[in-house]
Image (cartoon, rainbow, N blue to C red; front, side, top):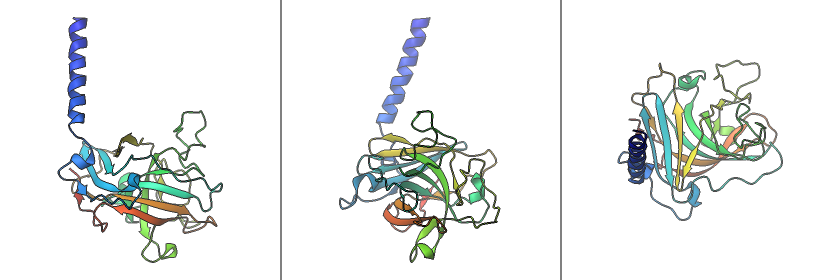
Length: 250
């Protein structure tokens, strides 16, 4: 009986592996937001496809790149002010209240980020060294709320600031920065050109009709560490080409 169970389990595992080998990357999905390769861009941030799908109230955000996803990270500057943040981002049509932010405050996006000069996931130890405050360079996930912010440049976006003395609604895992940023602890996963993040939602969040896009971008902390604190400074690629959120969550 033990042998039969072991053989059956092995067969299931092999079948699952074959299914994945058949193509579960964003570029393999017929309804993904496709983007042509551009060899003038850094390959790890050149988007070929962005996709999101759901199983119940768990959403998988994933993106296929033209290189090795996550292989490139920003250089340390030695200070928080002026620090660079590199990111894979999935903007959505979800209201920010879906994950615990004040509603109606901007564009809710899932982001995977790397930034060696500071740590913004105080509840998580991404490099497993016993210190949760020293691993900002390790790729990790955030919910962010983005808003047009002219102070960052014409037509630029920034993570929404929290004005002094204001008390907007924030998620339980908000890391304490004065911006609309959450550190939910969803682990980014890498598979060659692919990055994926599995994000859980509360059972009462309506995920029907949600649209999305894919973006790779650099952000920078204000050198004086004041509002606007975190500006988008360079858009590497946009899957749709125009941030129109053409993807539909299914």
